[in-house]
Amino acid sequence: MLLEKSLEKKNIKYMVGFDLGDRDAQISYCSTQQTEAETVPVVAGTQQYNIPTVLCKRTGVNQWIYGREALIVAEAKEGIIVDNLFSGAIEGKKTVIEGVEYDMLTLLTLFVKKCFGLFYMIAPSDKIEVLMFTARKSDDRVIEIVKQIVESLGLIGTKVFFQNHEESYYYYLLHQTPEFRLAGSVVLDFEDCLRIYLLEWNRRTMPVVSFVTEQEFPECLQPIWAEGEAEKNGQMEELDQQVLENAIGTFQNRAISSVFLIGSGFQENWADRTLQYICRGRRVFKGNNLYSKGAAYGALEKFCPTKEGKEHIFLGREKLKTNIGLQVLREGREVYLPLLDAGINWYDAACEKEFYLESGNSFQVTLTPLTNVFPEREAAGKYPVRYEKIELPGLPLRPEGTARLHIWIGMSDAGNLHIRTEDMGFGEIYPTSSQVWEQDIPLA
Image 1 (spheres, rainbow, N blue to C red):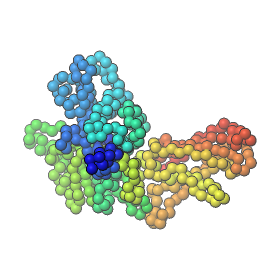
Image 2 (cartoon, rainbow, N blue to C red):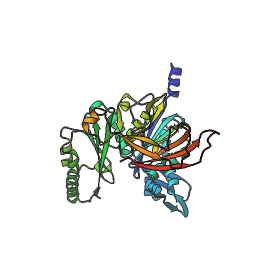
Image 3 (cartoon, one colour):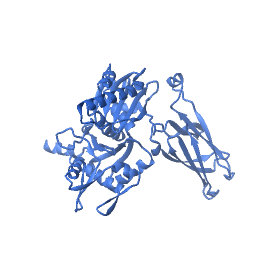
Image 4 (cartoon, rainbow, N blue to C red):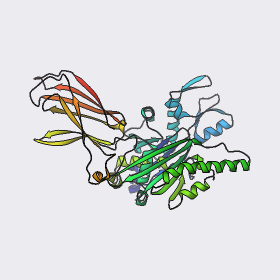
């Protein structure tokens, strides 16, 4: 029996979510043995999940400390603190400590490595099957930084992905009980400033399409609380009114069943009127590990898609919202050849194919958008199809079916498709002209 348990534990694979922010980081995970996400505590047996995104170099020695301990050492004036690691890495900044210049990306990488030491107390790195990073935004620079960090982690055989907080929110809800998906849901994220995420489900489609709308309120900031009780109470009333006014527009005339309060801005008990409003007929939750758990669930879906994952699709801002393919002849019949499917991240969208041009010097790409469709057509599964002609000027004229083409399809951003076509010739009979054609197609 002991041997069976040992073998079972040896075969466990882990799907890990890592939430990386400028203020805090967090790690959650699922496994093949336990599919409900758990968050790694900073201190065993507690619910202290946030790891402050800081490093501290102990004065006079080459010793780097991270997280909460780094703050303690710096407060004791025994070391030099380095914060804003994530934003500093994004901006390509450097810092000088005790006369030595350090690249912020190098320091951020060191911080992430030290964070993973917490997870390695649960399982070794070779047990991580899928690793999903998540952060508030996802642009080219953020993706580049994540890739560089991953290269230094020394993970062998681990599949690594990235998703933003919006998608992590989606995966978190997807893995809750079904009543969480009967109506819309809202996240009030109050970290540096107030952000409101509204997640809605379109049940007229199959699979069900979900999407998130984000609103940012840069004028609604966490105050520096006054020391005097009367003045602090005044600040709380003013903040409560400001947040309530910003939130009302999201909740009015919408069916919202769940609300999540996230961020250090909700640590103080100031939101009396806001809570009275949002709690009417809704389930309200307060916590701080939604995004890291959502990242872990996203990793789980990459490892083994669940029934819910197959029945739903997320079309966020960073997602391709159009099916892309070609009409080709196969065994004498015209069929649709899919190239890129809606629902993937635009920065992951890439495809290469070779085919023979039947005649002429052009071909058509078939675009089928899944958004902005009339409800009655959507309900019937009828989506508008658009055809884009790809011209190949200068392609040598050859007999029918002897022009072999290689195409590469990618995206420069969420709304623009890039197609690169190369003439491959036809063996020794018709050598390649070595011509390459490039064309951009707007999807909006």
